[in-house]
Image (cartoon, rainbow, N blue to C red):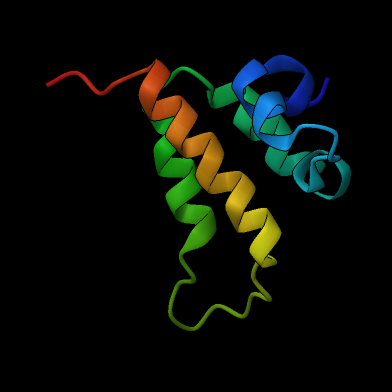
Length: 83
């Protein structure tokens, strides 16, 4: 199951476009679906986007970063952190 098919706001954001995450990053999609609705989701995204010192990673394309950022925004709106 894809993120686009399970998160209606994400599908609306993408419109007719295919999700690059769904197409090219199945492990990220699986982990995101597992953590969706939990505070750990935001931590997972932060870990994906930050390159640790001494670790060699190619990073994500700008389009993938936009998708991750939109997912983070949707998640924060739907599941606000409790103080």
